[in-house]
Length: 135
Image 1: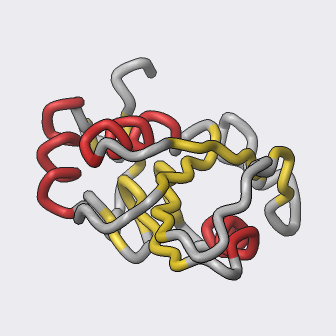
Image 2: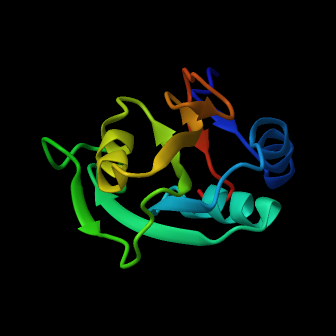
């Protein structure tokens, strides 16, 4: 039987984070929901603050629900001039990451995803969906 998903355990995820993430950021900004776990792990690894934003583009079954990503929750602090790492779980089209970057135009920004298209991809580009331990 063909498996169209890849399994990623926490230990493997941390190994990839340690391989790919540099200590040059002031903040990690995780995109809710999928970016919270990798964002938290990276913020702990680098010992820097974690902030979250909520951008909705797809539903829980990964079906597109908007033509363009919609910001549902912004930050209430000013990060102008800061080095920010924006984190999400998966990026296929970069639409959500681009929308997130638009919130921080006066900051130095890099993006990271577990899998897909970003400045840093821990397991990408991908040809399979991620099978999370809780699924």
